[in-house]
Image (cartoon, helix red, strand yellow):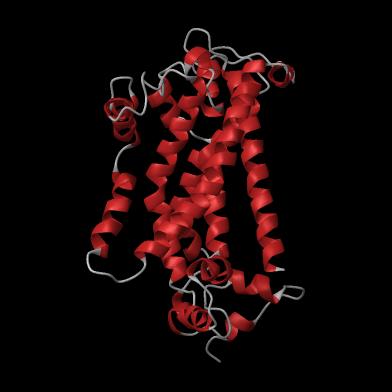
Length: 325
């Protein structure tokens, strides 16, 4: 019979192995699957897998290995130092200062970034005349380069900038507020810049999520006498809870990785005396300086930043599961 050679198999040959060895389609296949080979899906995903390995997996393991050496930024012989870099890191006051700044940045920015874009999305969700203009205006900062936005905020917050000039002319202050010279004000100004630039981006997330909240629930609650605030907390927030978890996770990761805002507002030193340096900023200073840098120690700090970020992700996943339960 035609095709009988396909069904013949040596004694002890597993059916699954036979299907992999024979060139014909798997039993029960139809349509395009009749001509598909087992390796075809891997062929299509090979470029993505290759990019992930080259730009993700390999750099991670390379950084992990470098953290146990005294490698230099410009290359050369690297000696194995064991856990010396991690021991040095635990006793480094500058590392703990950078960690404090990164964690504080996340603790302040994340809650605000979760709530403010949601409120903004609720405001622009309604189909009112001219609402498209406001949606575009709120999204415009997302399209601007971080460097351009940072330069704009430098001009706004300088001692002779627009903000201080306006406040002085309005007789609200006597002397200029040191937005760009006081360490705490630099950190708060950078947080404001992050919030302003990210509002429009996460507003789009919430607009998509709000479309899945049944309008009937709002109508029924309004008929029962519930006000706008009560409907927001008891209908809107539960309806977009998954989106809030996603925004919180993405914002937390971005807050721990913040660099450009601190660099633009606090200059290349990271504020006066480096008091506003975050972990990415500190990694640049200790690991990438061509003269005094130690790539091994910088890699150890990078591993610590990875562990901190991983802890945040696991915490977010646990909270999500608890909410679903």
